[in-house]
Amino acid sequence: MKWNEKTKTEAIDLLKKSVSCDEIAKIVGMSKASVTLLKAQSINDYSERVVCQICSQKLKQITHRHLKNHDMSFEDYISKFPGVKTCTDEKTKLSKNFEHPNKGKTYMEIYGEDESIKKKKKISEKQIGRASPKFAGTGISGTRKDTGMFARSTYEANVDRIFQFENKKIIGEFDENNSREELISIDGEIISYQPDRVDVDGLFEKGAYLEIKGYMFPEDWKKICLFRQQYPHKKLLVVSNDQCYLDISYKELKLKYSNQIPLWEGERQNYKTRPDLYKVGYIEPEEIARIRKMYPDNIHVNITNLHERFIAQKCINFNKVSKGAIVNIKSVRLLAMSDKRKGASRKSSGEYNYEMWEIVTDCGNIFYVGNIEKTTLFYCYESDIKLKDFFEDNCNMGLSCGKKHCQTYELISDDVLNHSTRIELLKTLNSALLHKGIKNKVVKFIMIESQTSKNMALNNYETWEVTFDDNSILYYSNFNNPTNVYHIRKTL
Image (cartoon, rainbow, N blue to C red; front, top):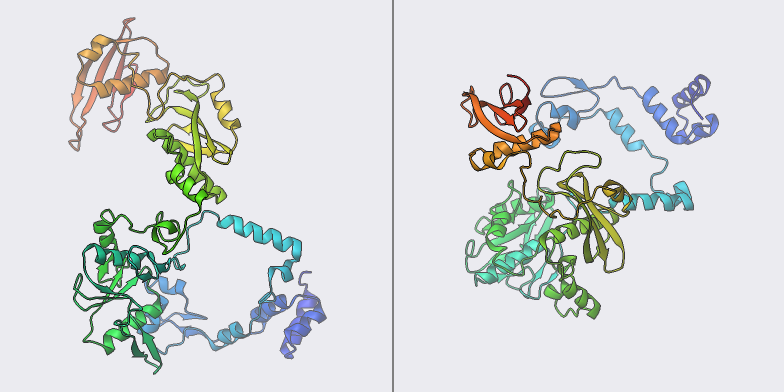
């Protein structure tokens, strides 16, 4: 049902008489949310304004968007002008009293059983393959087998390994020698704080406390600041990637040590993905051990060709991102090849020919990888229909896969090739002639004009006279073009 003049007037009169939104909704036949919105638009007095302390503009509310015009965050504004109102009393009251009709309800209660299942499934499918949100907790906690220390994250575990690698002593978070300190906040609240590690031998600084952070939450930084204020005689160093807070860069530690420490934890190899390497007392199931041995990096050990492994990785990525599944590649087989687009005489350019591959997984599922859109862009498909259509009557299995077969200069005579120092230019000429559909061979290639470019570029402006075996002549020039772009001209 939509508002009309009669129901709107009736609702406004009832609102002025302080009748509740629930009662008005029943009387006029509208939802409670619609009545609440009407109340916000028609009844509340917004004549009150707050003033921006920077530009003196009068506003209902000072927002992040407005402060963006002053290159200032909302937090900085509050800090610079403490005690200044950023919102009118009426708007604050309205936001506090507003109650969404679906607040606190489950999908089942709002949509019913069948519809709620569909909606939740759709939301779940959208999340497949997405990276974790910026502030999501991604720390992998547990006692590492190689260090013998409990770590809340891979960052902490790797710092422990650095100390172990350098043969330096470190005290863990729960060691009895790592004392817990009490901090007093501004409002008098007592906060308990214990640093992550203590540098005993001075790898970074002797006796210093180490706080290891992947992401610095405001509460964590508050504790660090209070500790430094209230215990000035104790040194606290922050190990992080965040330039705003760090004393020691984790990125630099990673660059220095990750290649030297075999069990360095990262995205691919960590406590979660390889518990057999890191988890104390972990017994790997026989089937998992067999698969790991047979399919290192999810590709069968017998697949050693670099290009075949590249094709297999395309299939792995497709399944991981699009289907949320991890697959093991059993075999990779080349089905078709071509060096030209279907129906076109122009040959492929770049690093690859057009290729069609069949990939079989250990579960017997079949996928297809091809690059029919562009020779350097490979995509994975669940069906071969699109690829088969491209290679129908357009296949040459004599070509080389992985990289384009050795460049031939079929339109350049051997005499010109053997006596020219401009092989790269002849290569572009050969491609240009093929593109133009010219089939005669070049028997003479001489420069007839040269001019220095305005900016003294590496390539000067040139015009070359091209003579063919039928005595016809064309000109190959980069005049009026960027110096490295040549075009065929019929006349000068």
